[in-house]
Length: 504
Image (cartoon, rainbow, N blue to C red; front, side):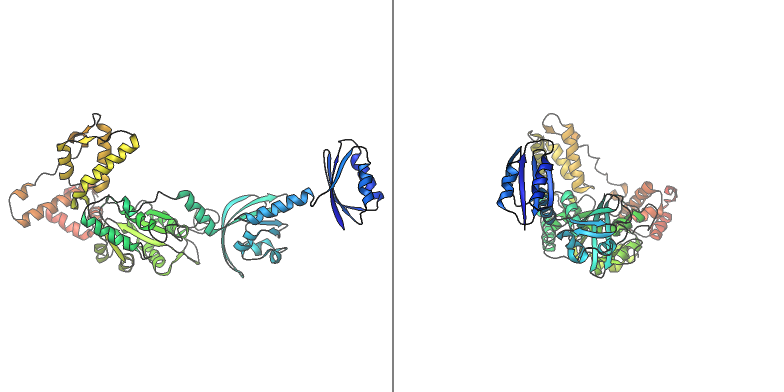
């Protein structure tokens, strides 16, 4: 039989010794004891009688003797256990290389019960031997491995416990992705954020809304500045994957080697400078969500094959890795190039093109839906007024005429930038044509004033190729810019007498 007592006393020298003498005289064993200034807790083992309480109260300086349900350290242990049971992160305690404790979350992440794990080598339980080879602290190490219990994939951080122990905090890969997504979640965009009155755009939106109901790949085609990413975000946010991440990648903005490691990840030691433990790629990170591959036409050939594997099998292989990892992502791709022509010229895989082009969306340029110019201008001005708390300025008739006649090669993005510039320049509450600072409208070439259709088309072709050569100085780069073959450009350069524009 055991009892736990709380003894309040004066803070005097010899008090603890006097209490222990009384208990020893009663023939009782002290199971545990905690002493604080003016307060003592004691757990007694044995047959207790009522005289012991009276004997303790008779001691000089003893104020009270009360029975309590738990010792302070027992209360702390119970609170700690409750905390460990409540947290979503796994906690594993290692001493001398063996497991000495774990919480329920760790049981779920490591697929093993505490009773089974107790006393086992930590390497067997963790599925790796690299985490506890040193008692040095570490943070956010990714662990993937096959064990007899199944496949493990989690993020681990560790802190040393003395000279021979360590506590390891575990987070499942699903938890880690959800946390990263919650911290980086962009502003949600829906189809209601697309400003339009044109029927051609409404038709595109209708197809995009239908794409929200399925998980098939979407290929968005359109000129630069037409809003391809806005469509991609709207499809994601109104689909069944809206709770997952939306990860945009510009395939033309990254070097080839970096693009591969960013998309597919890499294993530790796969190249110089590789992060210890490797790194998951975007397809792994975005599992459960959507990956938006902008400028898909710029992706190199060998990466096209790896992307096709993701689309067909839902599996990726990291750079330097041997095993394939299952991923659950939807791919939305976009381009301002003619992929069909690239396929015919063998610059883009035909099987990848057809796999991406399950649901095609073609966004018309702004010049093909000029009725939208007015509503886009009004929307932009009202948004500026709401942000600044000022009345929106009015546009002069000449400013409206210029806006509606201008060809808008940069589409909606160019229109927004033009209005932003005009709002900064206009100080009188009125935007004039001079505030727009639009480039002069193109003049009609002389060949258009005289001659038939063939002569006019030849002059247009010559001007387009000359402009591309002037910008790039290279027949190969001009061919890429105009989306034709290198041979085609070389033939036309010689036929049209434009060799003087070649710099390389």
